[in-house]
Length: 359
Image (tube, rainbow, N blue to C red):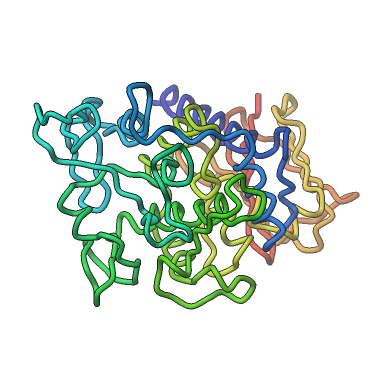
């Protein structure tokens, strides 16, 4: 069991670091001390750099092929998982693609989560571009796709369906939808995008109230982003999209980026490094890591650190210090047993977590 937990801990750590590295590496490294529209613009520049949308349909690798990888059923590699109704269907059962002669049952097609007709101008698919961006495409039941059409998203509860003439994606899909809409807004907002004429505004595709710092973003998608955490399918999509198209969806990698840009309810900070400005912006340092002498130092100029706690891989809290005293801006944790831990540091503005190793 310890070996399994260790492997899980290391795989999560490596995955998290690789996600952050995409944004921190040149060119167009993102400065995460930015907030609001400045951060939005920086992310737009990053995800628009050196990207090549796939052909919609072709004899070579196209969006049909990509969706069979991005949305592969984790429990059955021969199937894909369909958006909204969560059905698992064979990859071959497409409406079109490599199944134009319908030699297999025609079940699923490609849903543009941001509908082609609602964008200004429309999302065309005749050549690689906004209409073929795989971050906006999901496998969908042909009948469900038809029922949704180009209806705008609206608040609801329970399963997917029409609500007052609009569309609710369902409780387990609303976060996916929100993060896809936010990606499309950044990627094709006309600021830093190579498709400057294309605009995919959240206010056009959803029913809600504009947020205070951006009239084109609505509170509906911020709420959904916070309510519905990132799913396994979403995490699976981003590396494939980066490999095949050249960019990632930042809000899948870390939903809290939306909170830093537009405010609203606090979404999950997957990296554990963005949700506590009082510490992040004042040079927090945890060292040495790995610790060879069973002692960890926490150095920070943050005015108030309310609590520090250390958790083992099973989630058991093995150490806590409330209102810890500093010596030369350092908090000392000593006599630590060997192991792999998560160190959580809490201030009045939130919390941040660091993965540490004690040899």
